[in-house]
Image (cartoon, helix red, strand yellow):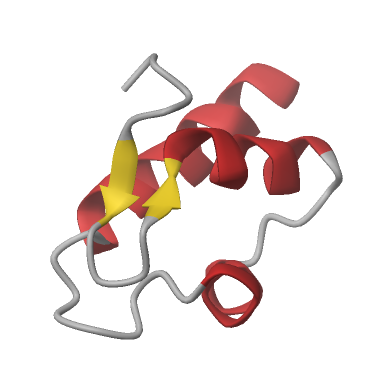
Length: 62
């Protein structure tokens, strides 16, 4: 998931770029990301991809 325009959550239309922007601003709590973007509020199919983005971000920040 390297393309920032790639849709991560089809239910809300949230893109990978939107998630990355929140992560760069310090928002790493998945529940908060969900409340801001609407991701995870529909079918839940994006759960693993969202978790992977957050985990990868945290790993590169340490």
